[in-house]
Length: 229
Image 1 (cartoon, helix red, strand yellow):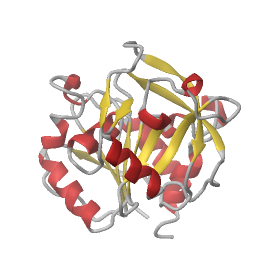
Image 2 (cartoon, rainbow, N blue to C red):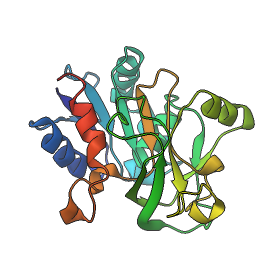
Image 3 (tube, rainbow, N blue to C red):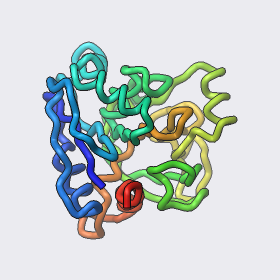
Image 4 (cartoon, rainbow, N blue to C red):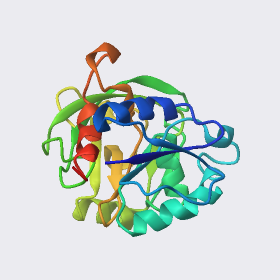
């Protein structure tokens, strides 16, 4: 199995993702600069976290127009799994690969801490290593992680089982007390209609081994590694 990591000016989690992917795949991913218009033949693509283009204009808006994104869209349409983490989630929404938008946190403050999540579906290439309803803990680090979508879109996401992760309390309740940023329906991550594009605000690549404080992110990368095994 092979993977590519898209690198924008301002990406700062690309190396973290590369390390997590190499540990799961047994080989380093291709690091693809955003100005490239082609991608190598790979089984998965990751759009990492960071501050693409310094988050100027609007988070992910400029990165979504980078030459490489046209090819990312083409691969996604062909069924290749595409994972967007934090800023990568913002890029995927701005590129139209996922619905909704990521707005300023309700607190208007940058949030950097571990959060509790509930896995809502195991029926995607990214979540196959988890059990539905499983409680996991991952770090977040964002200023614009407040997921917003119109009521019809939210209803479709819920009805079609496209909410992948939800913020919860340590007791597992999807309430305001467990919502760090004000996201509608406590949404932490969603997938597209085909199930092969996932965007999430928490950072699984920062929780792939106990030495980092937890390993709840590792099953996501192992699930990707199993795609072409």
